[in-house]
Length: 384
Ligand code: PLP
Image (cartoon, rainbow, N blue to C red; front, side, top):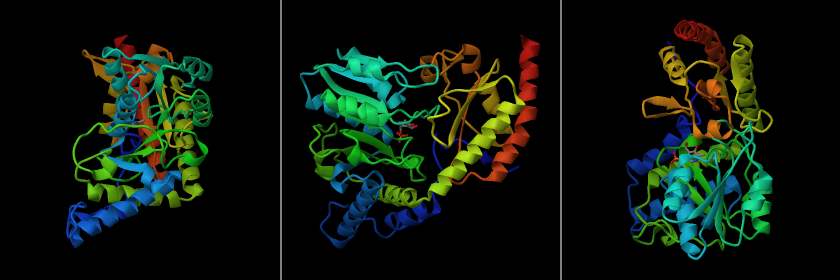
């Protein structure tokens, strides 16, 4: 049975071009970029080329890109580094639906005495912009707002968020990990200070990412060591990973708009096929402003965990935002913030596509799903 991978918001398949670009750095070109000899200099050159490739994808200057170990580290560095640069300010504004790399950081900061305002969303996952504007004060060191949500794909109006933050003079950090490669991003037109990026969501390698730091933005390093990455992120660089990120960024930049349209059409076909077949299924999130590759579908009265296991047995890889806590599967903080009915939230499954998803895979998924769900529904009604 062929496996069908519909979990691209978790991670993506490394593009063959990415693997090919990385290989020389893992074999012959193994120099330390800080070394003055030819081995080192060729590694340093490869990093600078990748920096340009990543910068080009978001229209930044190469020196505004600092390589990190991924989206999580970029989020941490953005938040902690900004707070360290503004030591007298003790307030942070973020949203209730951020990735755990942001939320768990701000929750820890609350324990350390910071005040954090979590801006809510409506039932469609849309941000309350008025509440955001009203939350910003003279004491606010930083606002951190994601571009697109990893669970629902809902896109926030980052342009408007950035305008509001700029008017109040508050530096804005944007977690663009899920938006990168799926939406056009141009930092020249957005007054933002910082943006987190990750390679493995755009067909690059895991364990490498970047923080865009606008020229002039204030930030202190959180790692102490040598002088790599302009002292902001010391440590010998993950050269192969960085080169892979550069190659993935290049592929994303040159991807035709037709590819994104094709992915969206396949997602729509998958989604409507499921909604038509199961009248107890509902889409979670704003269908107008959503990443074209993502659908989050809640199956009323079913358990996400049971669905995912049954899907996996049928060769379909998907995910749910639910996290297992104290023995029971709790709906994710994102669906809770959206106040999704518990009976739907408990059965929420995320399907996320990529440029490698085929029409055959979508048709196969629609062919395999009915028997799985009918079996689970029968089981659930027998138990209730
Ligand atoms: N931010 C968002 C929105 C994400 O979806 C993820 C990964 O799922 C991260 C941050 C963390 O990125 P990484 O896996 O590179 O640490």
